[in-house]
Length: 511
Image (cartoon, rainbow, N blue to C red; front, side, top):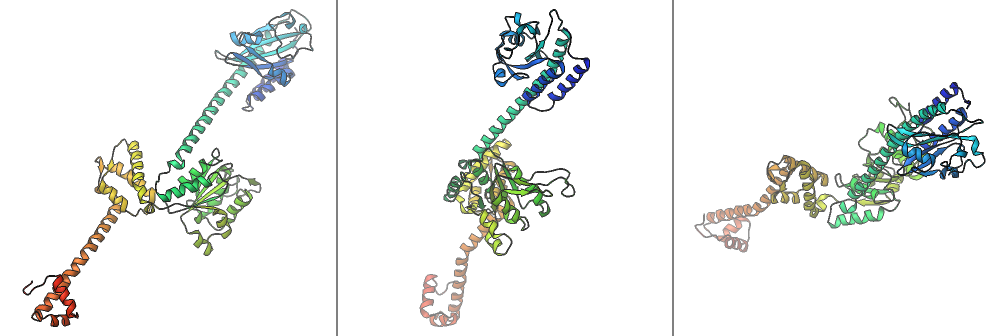
């Protein structure tokens, strides 16, 4: 058979095929391009690539066939020419498909062409010793007794290139599936971790918080979490997110008090390359990263006035521009804000925009301080003890004296301070039972002051009585125990001094 392509065509085809196979991660699209190159440069018609899966081989890419014809290209291992090559891994050449009973024409793509004019070449797509699939092409010829050695040599080279690309695609796809599975598992773990049932608190105040979370989570409303630092606002924000319809979207958190004012806009809205000195590339901001999910802005009361209108615009219009950019970016985010500030005072003093305040304060949730729910201290203490004992391989417990101190301590740092204290006790305690000696100085100091105040309070009445008793005795001695004279000396009535003498059981000769 006379070859219909030159060596130049062959080199060009191999170059084009190499480019196509590395052009994207869409393996079907890449292989369709390879089949087109075989047709255009090498005169190989109706090229197909079929990939092996278990006991079946299926055409996934072709040139010169309709989608319906491609779908029909499915073979069991050992079935037809393609099935034989996929099973045994050896090339097969059919000089004339009209004379070959094994040629099944399952796709139906050759109905309009006389079979005796078509040769069929089929080579395995192999990576090392693994058979990944089959590459096949048609060649038209006008005379018999031709050699297909050059075609087979070229097809084996192309099949080798395809094999490398397919194997890479399989590895990428396997890693992608593993990543997606791990991501889903982590989301499920997070969803379980931040269920309301896993936020610790049995007090009535916490039950009110749980009820609010259950009501607001399924809605689209903005939420404002209020409470002192350390009361668990971020934990509640995550619970709302993972109980909402946005649970599959991102949860992006940002503390408005943690970044210098000059960088806040870039952090929240991103910036374009060259927007300012040091902006070496485009960067997405927190709002853009939160698209489809939830953004949690902690300490929103510290947001500068200059940025507040831009936050308001995102909430109202769902759009913004990056710093240094002109393109308007649309986002779909739910905002959960948190503050330990008195926003009403901030609004009155002009530090916080009134319209933004009302936009944020759609559903306010107030988190109680730990001193307002002291009945939760023992269960919180047990939870943190278990957590940090496991982390440090210890089995430290808490003495009843320490528990009494905990129950009476004011906890200005709230749950966060309690957690940090428990961790310290577990790490630093040399005994299995942590005692008062192991407590941090600030807690011990407050405990001692409280105990001293109680002692003073208890001692004061008896001290006053002792002073009064001594003064009455002195007056009686000076007046020769004449009660009327002693009463006048002390500024008392005769009746009052009589009562005091009886109360203190004073008699002449008393010391």
